[in-house]
Image 1 (cartoon, rainbow, N blue to C red):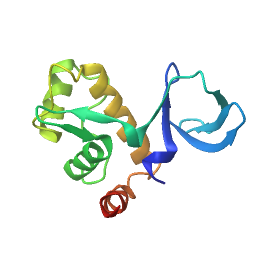
Image 2 (image 1 turned 30 degrees about the vertical axis):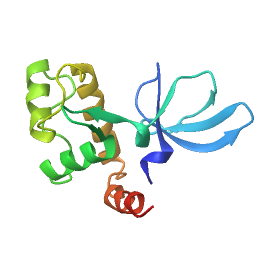
Image 3 (image 1 turned 90 degrees about the horizontal axis):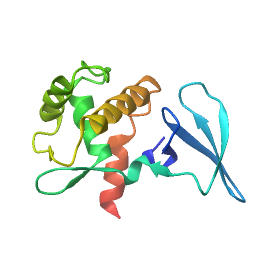
Image 4 (image 1 turned 90 degrees about the vertical axis):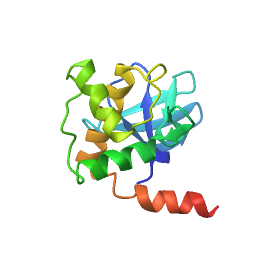
Length: 139
């Protein structure tokens, strides 16, 4: 599954996959507990394929950051936990994305990226990232 079908809903934990559209929004299924919820258009929703991380020179798509983590961890869960100290999280993120912008990428953002990566890895949803990148570049 591509990141275009995976969303984050403000105020709700974890990630959701889009199931179907409705007249006033859409139905999404939690990756954590498989519960389906109705999401209306007033909810603040972020599609993972649209999220990017600031670096000192450009914005790097979240997909690329996930690929870097996957490469570093050999496809396994991250060696750091989202609840680790701010210093430990930043040190880890520098290994994954050496030129990330420390002034605009907060520890809370790094925590989310790590949580999301681990959730996607657990559901084996990271395998399609490379193919997705190739398809994007061909267009």
